[in-house]
Length: 322
Image (cartoon, rainbow, N blue to C red):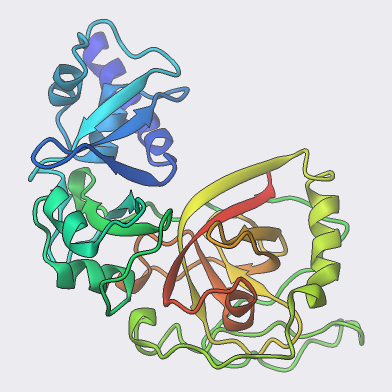
């Protein structure tokens, strides 16, 4: 009886750890597709089962490990991608699985290697119409369905932390906020509000027009705040994955929506395809909508343009205060 209770407790408490895995990159070719997972502190077969939608025994068997032995910290596991936990339907949802494009690789070859996924599905997931692929870029080839059908983890509660350099930010809403209270200082600049969160999904929005008034160098003050918050880059945490944009009235500064960084946090966003980076200030969490499933950040349109991207969704790397 006690052993059963302990097993259930371990299953619940360690599920969150497995969902913190970095961007999922597909390995192998069909029908033997899989993703790699490095065992982190607190993870076990049950937490991996919940995160990847496979029975614990199947994960153990795929890696020739006995469940009685447990998992060793830092061990590299193969997580099979099967019909039970991997969807390549047009309306698939969950955590996206990426393929890194090789030199001279075509969209057709990607389709053949990964279960002959329809070309139109790949175009839809990655928001492009042609067949051309760029070397070393990342494209979505399907979605992992976690146990219970959860599309994405709910955002963690906001950290309670004093920041000497960041003043309280207003809550982001879909309409302009009411006039500031009497206590607001005259020098306080109102933060922009995303204009698209209650309208059509991001994927259907037109590409933003160029904003020449917001070059990268205009967010120097955010860069200085980033250096202060991260102690010169010594105290940082990082993420990799897909991002998108929202329409904003910000001119000369860049803003972001993020699920775990507190409001006022400065996030360094890098486009690995061209090496460009911007520093964006967090306004609020990403709204829980189907169109936002799997996203790690939403940037204001001027910030996205400064990164040199004109796609509705783009792959990026994040760095912010640990």
